Image (cartoon, rainbow over all chains, first blue to last red; front, side, top):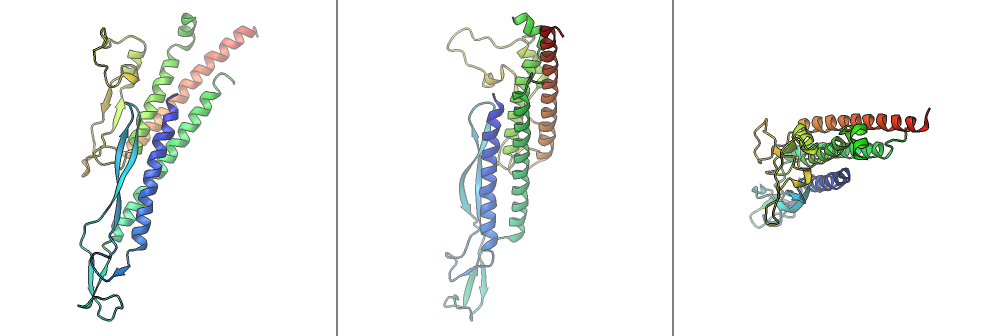
Length: 134
Length: 131
């Protein structure tokens, strides 16, 4: 019964999108954090997706890893700040809030699509189980 | 027995299997809507059904060393890549809306096939009961 495979496929996609939502949440939460040096500053994190090929038919999604953004950190001159370094600079995160919001919307839409696929497949399987009964 | 099956189900049973396999392919497309470099795939249903009915010529493997076609699990139907409608930066060719529409269409056709099968089965049981 190859409809069973859809549960694996959509399930893997849902877990991948959840990872993406998770990183987006932590990026947005840390958008305004500051640190005393460029190395310590928070860097935006993004998951990397890859297709997991099992056979000709099914192809789920894998999260290969999470990469940190290499965009320059947000350096500000604030000598009064308790975390400021010797020259009076603090280092904010390199999170792009607009990009993260778009990521969040895209992830939630993809998640919804996969839930719909799951629901439809479940419906079809239940109807197949009742084949010949009515 | 095969003759009864052929006459009663009129290939709807094969269509049901192919529909569920196509649902699989389309679900994989939707699952990979955000994967870089993923290429959307689909099967040509008419072609696949012709192969399943034995009306189309298929590759014959006469020796153990012969390579199997990589789409052997589809009963010989050719898996094809979709021609992208929009260019994309990450090399992904999935158009989520199109795939969703195709998935729904496939689900409706699956249900239609189920209805046809249900009709033949209930006809057969009625004939058996002599109502």
